[in-house]
Structures are given as structure tokens and as C-alpha cells.
Image 1 (cartoon, rainbow, N blue to C red):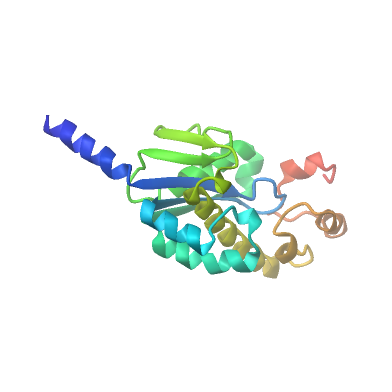
Image 2: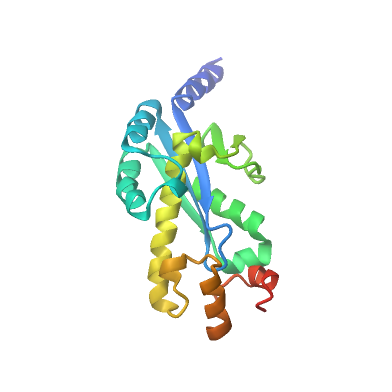
Length: 205
């Protein structure tokens, strides 16, 4: 009986929070795929909405960077995970993306009772309750916040990697396969952080 009361209390507490997860860099040809999970109370969701938190793709890089500290401050908890270009080539992009999400979730202090995931694909390794929401970053503040966190962290990494892998304009293209980026690969060759499985599709290797 006591156990049931504790379970009911835990479920009631969990209902106070919205937990959203999103990934960035899935379609890039260079560097890792990132995932972020953000836990928000109802009150802090409203505050972040007033600050202008929405789908990261609708915000400028400057705006995302300004929102990041507000999101981290108002989050009850958050986690960030990534999966490398090597893992993407070995496992495939879907499995690697799931791996980045699981790594982010493992950084939370407590396992969420329900997870809101952006997009139509199930997070197959997750054994908890999950809801898939297409365009979820436009519908749920927790997913939008997660998309901003993942995007800023990944963009910052790309800008730093430009110093190591100059000659590919990584600071500009953020690892995506722009025409300019593909042209520079033909000129300078493939680095160890390029996703070879993606470049095969572009007939670059």
C-alpha cells in the first residue's frame, strides 16, 4: 500500500514537469550529431515562451546564444549528448542519433516518466513512455528549448573545430553539405571528422 502511495506521488510530481528532447546535425556531413533534453515546470515554460523561446531554426544564431543562459537557468534539469562521425559511419545515422539522445537522458538526475520527442521516429532504446510530435519544436516549449541548447552547443563546437580543420569554412556551414563545402572537400580532401557514409551518397568518395 505504501509503495502504491509513493508511486502515485511520483506520478503527480512528474506531471508538474514537461520533458522535451531534440537533435541537431542529423543531416550534416561533418562532425557529430547532438541531442539535448530539457526539463521544465509549467511556470518556467510560460516565462521562456515570453522570452521568445521557439523552434531554433526560426531564430538567429545571436538570439539563440542570448536565450541559452535563460533556458539553462530556468530548466529543472537538462542533459546534452553527442555521437561522433565515426559512430555515424559505423552504426548509421538513426542509431547514432538515438545514442546521442540516450547519452543526454543519462545525464538527468531522474528518469522522466514521459518524454516528448521531436519528429515521427521512436527512440527505440528508451523503455519509458514517449510521445512523438512532428514539428514538436513549434508546439512544445521543452522541445524548442532542447533544440536551442543542442544547436548552440553544436555550433560552438563547429566554430572551434574550424581552428583545427581550416579550409572547409566549418564556422560558416556548421558541417552541413553546402555547395561550397562539397567543393572544398574536392579541393582539400576528406578529414577524419567527415561522415564518409554521407559522402558516398554525394559520390565524393
